[in-house]
Structures are given as C-alpha cells and as structure tokens.
Length: 562
Image 1 (cartoon, rainbow, N blue to C red):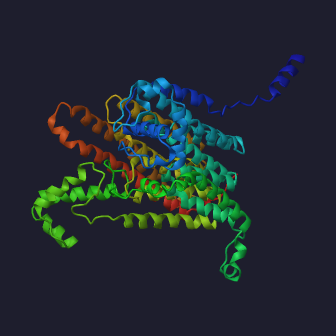
Image 2 (image 1 turned 90 degrees about the vertical axis):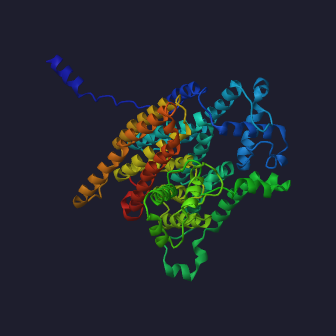
Image 3 (image 1 turned 45 degrees about the horizontal axis):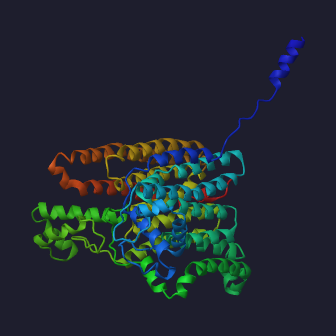
C-alpha cells in the first residue's frame, strides 16, 4: 500500500516547465565565425568608398571633408556617419595604415590587412543591431510574445540581405538598422522622446531614412503632441489650440533640433553647408540604376523594351505605336536609343517608346501613397498602425522613388518583420516580399565563388523562417467562411510564385556559367539582370497590393492584442 501511495504521489508531482533561452548571444557568436570566413570573398567598390572616407576623416580637417575630391568616391553621407568614420580612423593600426588603408588616392591600392580591418569594423558595429533586438525580446509581456519576438529578431540578424550587402558586398547597414530597431522598440514602449531622439540620430547617419520620416512625424505628433481623442470637427473649429500639448511639442522639438544642431553645426560654422547638402542630394542621376531595382519602373522599363522589339520585328507595328502615343518614330533612332537603356549608366535615362518619367512624377506618386498610409496612423497612433504605416512609407519610396537602389528593399523588409506575426493574413505578403527582395540582391554578387553561398543561405533562411513565422503567427478570427476559398487560392498562388524562384535562379545561373564558353550567351548579360528585376518586381508589387488592402480594409489586424 505504501508503494502504491508513493507511486501516486510521484505521478501527481507537476512536471518541470521547459526552460527557454531567448538570448541572441549564441547567434552572434555563430554568425561572427561565419562572417570571418567571408573575409576573402568578393567586395564591391563600396569597400574603397569607405576606405577613402577613412582617409578623408583621418588626414583632412573637418572643414574639408565635404569639399575634398581626389577620388571619385567623395564623402556623401550625413555628418554622424562622417564622425563614425573618423572614430574608426583613429583605431587603424599603423601596419594597416601602411597597407593602403589610410591614403588619399584616385583609386585605392590595399592588401588583405585593410580588408580584414574594415570587415571587422562591420562585424563590431553590427553589435548595435543585436543589442536593440535583444531589448525588443526582453520587452515581451509573456512567453508566447517572447517566442514571436525571438523569431522576429533571429530573422533580422540572420537576414540574407545583411549578409550579402554588409559582409560580402560591404556596407554598414547592420548598425544603421540597429538604430532603427531601437526607435521601433521605443515606439512600442511609448518612449516618445527617445523614439524621436534615436530616429533623428539615424537620419544624421544616413539620409535614406528620410523616406520614412513622415511616418515618425505623424506618429509622434498624434501620439505625443496632441491631446484629445477622438477628433471631431466641432472641437477643431471651437479651439484648435487645445488639441496641442505644447509642453510635449517643445520637448520633442528641442530634442530633435538639438541632434541636427550637433550634427550640422560644425559645418555651418565653417560655411560648407551648401557643399554638404549638394553631396547629400545629387540630382544628376537617372530614373533607374544600372541594375533595375524591382519596382514599378522596372516593369515600366521592361514594357518599353518589349515595345522596342515589337517595333523592330513586327512590320507596321511602329505605325500603331505612333497612333497610340501621337508621335513619330524613326527605326534608326529606335535602334540607336534602345542601346542607351541597357548600358548601365547612371546619367539621364530616356525611354524610347513610352513617355519619359520626370523626377516630379516620382515625387508626387511617392508622396500620395505615403500620405494615404499616414491618415489612419494620425487617427489611430498605435504601435501596430505605426508599423503598418512605416512599412507602407518605405514601400512607396521603393516602388515609386527616383534612382532607387535594389539594396533599399531592406528598408521595407525590416519594419514588416515586426508586424507579420500580428495576423496570419500578413504572412503571404511577408513570404513574397522577403523571397523576391533577397533574391533581387543576387546580382550584387556576380562571381561564381559566391554563388553557392548566396543561393544556399537564402534558400535555408526562407525555409526556416517562413515555417517559423507560420508557427508563431496569431490566427486570424475575421476570415468569413465565404472568403476562405479566396484566401486559400491566394495563398497557393503565393506559394507557386515563391517555388518558381528555384527554376528562375537555376536557369540564370546556368546561363552565367556557360557564357564563358559560348559567345552568343554574352549578348544576353543584361537579359539575366532583367529577368531578376522583373520577376522580383512582381513579388514586391503584389505583396504591396495585398498589404495595402489589409491595412485599409481590415481594422482588426491593427488593434492591440493580448
């Protein structure tokens, strides 16, 4: 009997709860070892750009930083990044400086010591991203949220985009996105002053983040500087000054203006602000980059190329084009002008058949779609709406902006990663965007040595994190029975699109490998880039359409959940 009782007691004991480790320390160690192995890999001209900036900051006085032009790689980032380069320049060992790291020349000549030093600075600066994401994990309210946040954090620190762009191609995006994540966490915790402070610092590091500045402005204005909710027309007309919390407005304005004063004040003192802003905002670049970023203008350029071929190959087609566009085309001019679109030049781009796109057009389109996303945020300045508007502002600037680089897709993916787990309906958008966005970066690494790494790493990331988000995403309770079939069809179409990347990438890679043996394949080098750009643009645009639909028409997604 005693044995039976003891067995019953042992069975009744509660099982110990499983212990979870949500620290990013192990991830940082593992990825650092992998990044060290990539030291001898290919690096782009961006490496020499930053090497030249180190030399400028080290060898020249501050007043000459934005004037010096010995090299074509002139300093064209905001002051805080220039100060960051100055800090790194002070840490350059003598043996590395003599290796060619610190030298003002038209073209850098350096050895492996310089490569190792600069790649180490990227790895160490990326600690900012890990710290910000660890803080994001630690702010979780419960175990379930902590699991979701851990998946979000790991998907960012293991991002193929950061691995390709920072640790092979060479840039410092990890550190910059770390500051962005810090501001997002501040928005989540309603630390508005700290949010404004960190985002102002970020803009003074890299001005590309001005694309999402309207979202921060509206969020901080509506959430921190305005008093009464809800807004009504009678209250606005009676005494609009009561809506403004003037103390908070002064606090926020003082913080933001102080950051810009610290950043630009020294250059204003030396009277070089005009040269500084001329470097930050050059207007001599064309609509598209040498490799078309996967956006609206990639599709526009592709249609122009198709119309060119139809005009040249189909008899009488040019007469139909003349009727539609109300202008005459000479075949010789079409042949001559068609070559300019594929030369990869950075200057002015003129379309042959379709009307030319002016910078004002891109500005109006970008502003329109950004303003549309800001209206719900102004009315409902919640953390969830903030993330949605932040993603759409970045999306609009990427899709419709002037001279957009393919690397700017990271500015869309990172904010979207924070909101995708909010509702399962957002998962197809995320899957299509991340797959198309990361694959669109493949042409940055055109060598055969890096082919296996970029393809395998991206493939494993997609398999792991698409399934991980599928596990942690919150179930949607708003899908009606009549709509389930539509959602099912859209989900399957999305999977077909993602799976089709396998034959697309393999076909293009095979053409690249065989182009060295067959002369005729060398004529299709631009065709390979065009396939990447157009097919990835389909995913970026379709995911934007679906996300926009959910942002405006499904309010339940953007409500805070327990």
